[in-house]
Amino acid sequence: MNNRMNKKGALGRILRYMKGQIPMVIGAIVCAAGSVLLSLYVTVLIGKAIDCIGETVGKLDSGRMIPILITIAVIIPIAALLQWLMYFLTNKITHTTVKRLRTDVFNHLQKLPLSYIDANSHGDIISRVVNDVDAVSDGLLQGFQQFFTGIVTIIGTLVFMISLNWQIALVVVCITPLSFAVAAIISRLCFKKFKEQSVIKGELTGYINEHIGSQRLIKAFGFEKTAEEQFGEINDRLNVCGRMAQFYSALTNPCTRFVNSLVYAGVGVFGALSAAKAVTGGFTVGDLSCFLQYANQYTKPFNEISGVITELQNALASAARIFTLIDEPAETPDTENPALSECDGRVEISNVDFSYVPEKPLIENLNLSVKSGQHIAIVGPTGCGKTTLINLLMRFYDVTSGEIRVSGNPIKSITRNSLRRSFGIVLQETWVFEGTVRDNISYGKPDATLDEIIAAAKAAHAHSFIKRLPQGYDTVITNSAELSQGQRQLLSIARVMLTLPPMLILDEATSSIDTRTEMKIQNAFDKLMEGRTSFVVAHRLSTIREADCILVMKSGHIVEQGTHSELMQNNGFYAELIRSRQEG
Image 1 (cartoon, rainbow, N blue to C red):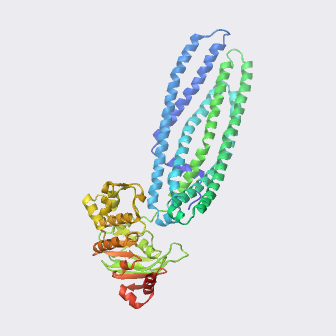
Image 2: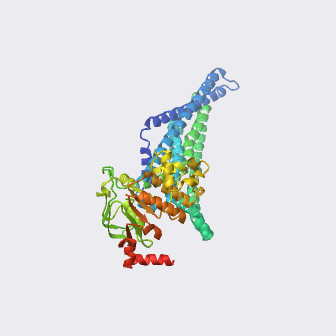
């Protein structure tokens, strides 16, 4: 994993996501400039209004003041409208940018190899797609709004202050770098801690996700206390890191406020001396009032930016994690490969080697030739490579060396999608998503008619329990706990029954179904497998004894193959497995 993504790199890539939004960016800048300049001009008018009171002792120059007040009354709503437009545009820029980022990271997940998904915490991946993207959104929203108004305010106030009295403006400019220096030092500390905080949040999300899905097991083994202690350890680290991150970020605001107070004090002292020495037409009390307000307006952006520095640093740290995920190498593209046009069910495996970890070989020199329509059962002890063989056939993983051919075509030379559509697969781990029963069954064939779906459900012996649901096939499954494990497995089988692929993979497909239903399902599978090549991973003798060929695997090798009767007569490893199960 690339951990070199730094703050500057993350910011640059976020800005590139704004391509196509330049008109809105320009509009936001124009609105910010208009709003700020009008607000600054109001300050000038207020100073002139004050001079209307103070120039003649005991007399109010209403002739000059009324037009000034009318102008102020007109300008203020216009400035407010421009400010609203600026917020509207920055909101749209931010949410459009974040939408593109979220889309890219999710789409990239679809292209990542299963090896990455299997090797990394699912909770951490979820945290990057959800929590980290939200953090980027919050940071960008506040950052852009303060950036647009802040820059214009700083430049505008400087121009107005120089036009009033360049000597006092020079005092302001000389003290300002202190704010930048303080903010820069604390910013580095914040980024480091917020990046660490994001990593721990991902770890915590992964831990919670894992334990929510394993509550029955945790309670069954009395693991609650240990789980609480492990959670507490991660939570404590997050607490310490979070407090340090907040401590560093909290330093920014008071430090910059201290510098800003120095600016205000300097303006007050030098301004008062200038006003006291001024002759008629010089630096007036109204000018001093303007200058003090400009000093506040000039320093306000520094305070506001320091106030959102926490969000900005958190956003950049989160963005770095997101881009690290996006930079993970995708599956080798196969878009230039032709699709598998016809599949007759022939499978050939030649000299295949494979390992999940290079230094730990799993499958070595595997060879197999399967004829069209053959029923192949795969048996062997846990960890011998049965499920790995399925992963290689489906090209969830690519072989390290050797070759697998389907209908005479090397699977690396055809598209993954066409290869996988040639197989119907039912796994031991069933998958049911939130939606109607009808949608779940038609997942592999969205355009299927209701009659086709019902026929598939009947073939899978799922129709009877579906009809007992509140709305039958239109019942929305919102929680997988609403269905038993066996019922979910029947839906998974019906899903395959609907697609009628030329080849089948059944990985303990009937493990959660009672014996009586299994017999019915087996009859349905027998009909489905007629003329279709099928690979069945199973432990039950009733499932494998009728196979045309039984592959006996041990330590990544096929040590025996043949029919049930042939293998029992050989009295080898297969016979030993069968006897051990019968004794058990």
